[in-house]
Length: 134
Image 1 (cartoon, rainbow, N blue to C red):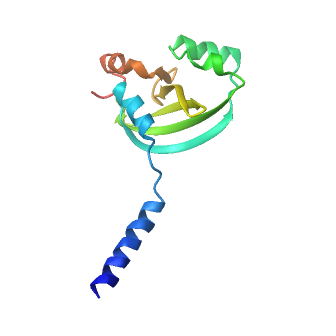
Image 2: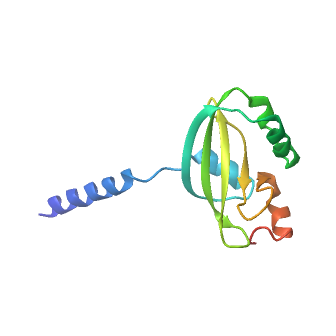
């Protein structure tokens, strides 16, 4: 009887774990070095990177400078929700990009702020400017 109960418990644990998306440890480490903590994976998308020149200039003005050298290349984009929140209490999201399984960069997204995207190294500045909660 004890074996049967243990077998059922193991099966339930396996089934409940199957639906969860696992976090990429390399991404967790990359973001933690910049002061951010992942809450959950939202989406993974592999695509050819295409960004109009005007939009690319806007990214670069926000300190997001890695994208230009990967235009036309296949990238995998990982979207995450972070544990950190903006001043309105909304979760901050990030996009990380990989080429051939190497992280090439990323940026954060604040839905309550214009221009909305920020360099992942700007956490302290965003706190000082009261854009995110401390």
